[in-house]
Image 1 (cartoon, one colour):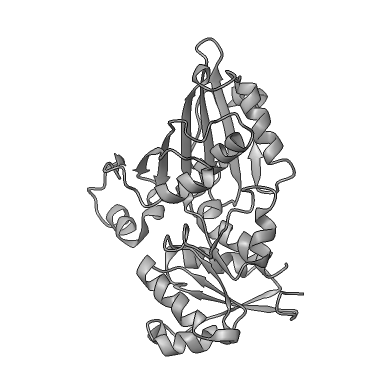
Image 2 (cartoon, helix red, strand yellow):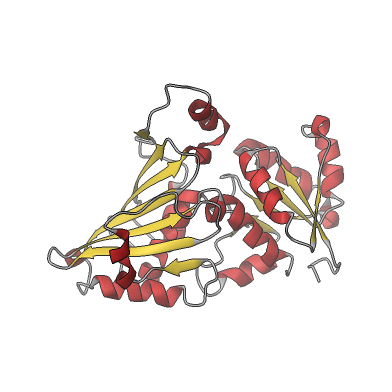
Length: 315
């Protein structure tokens, strides 16, 4: 049964024509307990029509720009006791008061918090990888919250929204690779800092490659600068303990790293909702690089949204 007590839950994707909306809709099509309610194309910007549909569904997924997402929440909440539950895939509410962060693997309590929530903020794709690597180490006492951290990441261009997708798919001049966000004020930093458990603002260096989807997020560490001088095996063990039993997050053992030949393909998890974590290291130099690999449209966006939807609807 769904949270609404019905055999089938109704879900409205506000912004279903966008990249994330289309991916969510495709995944929900495989859910026999969910019916996706759509609005006529000519009414997609009609506030009254959208609010009327919101009143007739159990849950709304927002796949909108930030400002439009804020307006959509006001529409939904204006329905009072008929207001649907909300999963917001925008950046607008990820560190907002009253919103639950939609990363079920954050800690032992987060999945239950999502189940009970009225408003859930879907994580950003980059923070998903960074938080997945850092939060278990902070919780385990291996990584001090005020430790200076740098997070480097590369994503396929689909993570950059409509304008970036058009720049890469329409223009013949799109670069093969570029750094961006070099003002060190990327909009994902606040959630990366808060939900990693860090008290010192991390340096975040994003980049984009000339491929549609796929993502690598990496965190370099000097092991001798950490309290207790942990080994790479200690770090791997802490990650493995945190994600034990997880259906979607896997810590890849060091014993399997040799087959990679010292390389990691950013596109290898495309089309899946998995998140793979690695601890690469050099024992002689006491250095490590933590890496998260995911599909930025999977566990980094639509896959995470569907995971949250299933939790909220009791599926």
